[in-house]
Image (tube, rainbow, N blue to C red; front, side, top):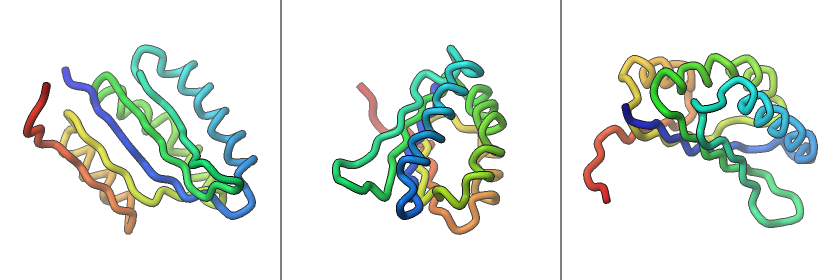
Length: 123
């Protein structure tokens, strides 16, 4: 069993950072309640500055089943917040099943989605 890692960059709608912060706080709470032990990292980072316009999301899931469950748990939330933020790109690595990558690429449309599935070195 190999973990799955995600790093995504979100673009925040102008002037809506505080609203965005409320949303991601609620999402983090939901993840703690629904995904304890399955999602081991679910962190949001804003850049330094007075009015951030982007957010970096770092996620780690214990396995593909946990990743699928996370997508199911949050897909509606993300779709309802398209006026608040959009996903600019996602980088995913680890043991992600090919069918899941294909479905994510189909749903992502024009958003860059890169799957790093071939580990070439490790410590």
